[in-house]
Image 1 (cartoon, rainbow, N blue to C red):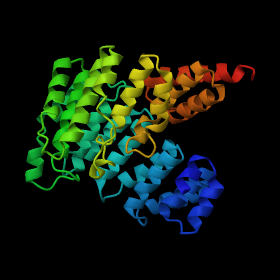
Image 2: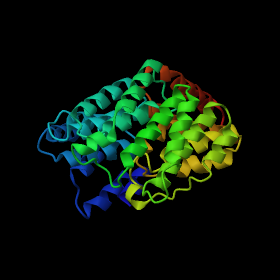
Image 3: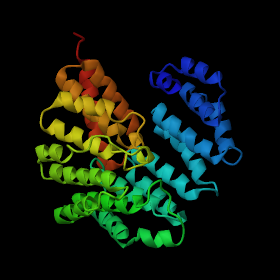
Image 4: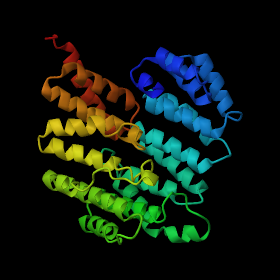
Length: 354
C-alpha cells in the first residue's frame, strides 16, 4: 500500500500508512528525499557512514531510486554504503546498477570492477557482463571484448570449490554466465557464438532444476540476435515460450526474472507496428521486478513514442519528462536520446490542447 501511494505521488498518504507500523531508516531517507528535506537527508547520510545498518542503507538507495524515481538522490546513499568496510562487493554492485540506470556506464563499470575485486564469487562479474550487453547502452567494442574475455576465462566451478556460491538454485551462475556471453556475442556481431551459448542453455536435461529458466534465457539470446538482424517476427517467435513461469526461488533473481526478455518483446512488437501489444508489455512488465531500475528509462522513452503516435499527448509528455529526469546525467554517447526527448517535449508542450 505504501509503495502504491508513493508511486502515485501521494507522499502524505504513504507516510501516514507507514507511521502506523513505524518508519525504519530507509523509510525516513525516502520521505526526506520526497520532501526535499536537505537537513534530514544530510543527517541520514551521516548515519549511513557507520551507525545505520548496511542493509537499511541499501534499502534506502532502492526505495529512493525505484519508488521515487530519483536515482541521483539514491546514488548518494549507495556511494556511502560502498565506502564502508562491510559487504563491499554487494555495495559496489548496488552503486554500479544505480549508475547504469542513469545511463552512466563509465562510472558504473568502475563500481563493477571494485565489486569484482572485493567479491568471493562471480556475481558482480556476471552482472557487469549483462549490463554491458544492454541494447540501449553504447559500450565501446574494446570494452565489450575485454568483458567477454573475462567471462570466458572465469570458471564458476573453480569459485565453488573455494566456497559456496550465492544463489537459491544449483547451476544458477553457470547458466547466467552463458546468458551473458550470448548477449555480449550479439553486441559484438558474433552470431555463431551467440547461437552456441543459446544452444548450450537449451541442452540442459529436463531433470536439471535450472533447465526451464535456462531455456528462457536462451530464448532471450535468440530474440536479441534476431532483432540485431532486423528480424522482429523471429524475435517474437523465439520468445513465444517465455511466459513468466519462473520458479519462486528465482522470481526475484536477475536475470532469471525475465526482465530482459520482456524488454526485447516490446522492442520486437514496436518494430512490427503492433503498438497496442507493445504498450501492454512495457506498461505492465516491470512492476517491482529485479531489473526495473535498469530498464525504466528506455521503457519510458518507448512508451512516450507509442503515446505520441496514438495521440495521447499528456501521457507522452509525462513519459518523456520522466525519461529526461532519469538520464539527465547520462554518458555522452546517450545524449542524443535525451536531446530527442527534450525536443519532443518542447513540441508537445507547445501544441495547443485539443
